[in-house]
Length: 640
Image 1 (cartoon, helix red, strand yellow):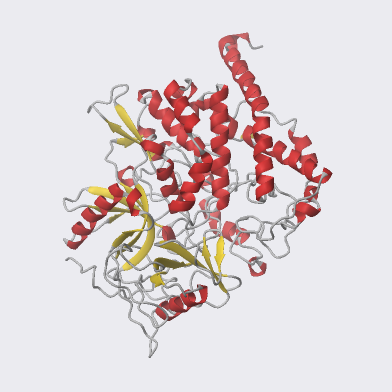
Image 2 (image 1 turned 45 degrees about the horizontal axis):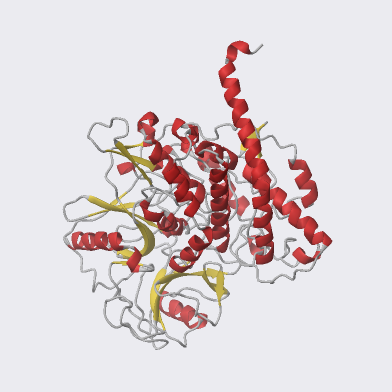
């Protein structure tokens, strides 16, 4: 039975309404913002439990009026809360907020249970929200998403004729296959509040609010969708073949709402629910890379995906998120196409241990072609960062700094003559004696930080802005890593945050214990970020010296090819691998290098020193590669 999506009242706690209120203007019509008066913007406010409310902003509106509307419409507590837009905490001035942007309302302390209900109010203040926007709307610049707009039209037509989406049962997060009128799969939708650990995760992996650290400590819950879109936007000229991806507001009854988020009231499966989600074009394919011999993959296809992975510092490129499509019906060499998907764990807020499935494929050891080198040479990380700030203004500055760092590294390494495998090896950490060691890239970063620290000691001039926006590790009121310490005593602070415990891994049965550990001392926090146990402060110069003896030899493959449950339609419902063991899906991250705790002047100095130190590191990597090849030629018969 079809549903009237245009006029149906949204009666759930997840309602999206274009809000008519005495606090602001009315919504006129069902169209987008084109043609409206200047100064009026539409925004979608999402609470930390996943509730969504759409509203129009007037010139006179501020954060207080936005919170009041949210409270009236959803009966959501807004006391001691902050309205955030990426790194920014919004107070009175909302001028930085773009049209159709998602905002996040976060409570500041204490009462952060994901079980807080968002029920419609009753009584004289009751306002009946109606979803007067479309059932699926792109958030952001529609002009960049022409393909997506066409898919949305097909899906809306199909829903009105009774063709409902299908949930994806694989993976750790919630995902849904949306179909056209012919029943063909056309899009994969992943709601931000159904990610692993998010309040409405349908697989039981809950326990955190939106904005807290997720599967990767440097990737927050609810923010993998932004990264999916960022990967698509950064895939210049469709170089790596990333499917069209957009951030959308989408309404349907198929989405999951957990009972505790619903105020312990069972959620009716027929109630319309609105979500903010990533929307990715479904690409028909025959299998994924784990089912197919890699020797049939074209060198150019592997290189292009590898170049993208390095640029975006992808921490989760496994065989399950490389789709394979036969081009000739048989699949002879050179006749298959690779489609990379699941980029939700790229662009971390600090350097992580990336995972590149292709790093040991023979294609990755073949030198770049002239065309590939020309493409890499033309990459402009500053321009890319500006583009993402414009198209995804909610993305965090720390993520953009990682993009700049990894793109500079790629450009310099390719110009030096390193192949894709060598570049990937330099970014990958080594595991020796059960301990995780910093990668060659991280060693260079640590040395650059050391040089900056020595310069600060000799000439402490820089005053630092006290605003501290995007530190994910240390935001406790009593934390030693205050920005003020940069100019006071740079060597006594711990910019690298080496966590106690090393690379401990734990099975899914330990999930609750992990959540408790990650959320300890929450009552003392001033924001939603993870506060680790106080790490031992190490002077930068001593840390630098301790790394001089770090071995940069052959890395061990961190993630063996472990078979697992096959994802439906070749897609996983989250960007976490469906082909790894439980221990590998939930590793305890170690942070050796942070980029968010530097002010703009320090960041500029760091990049200068970083580039100066790269060429000695490249030379060492070349010598290591030559030594490995020599050992392979000698063979085992020469070893005694």
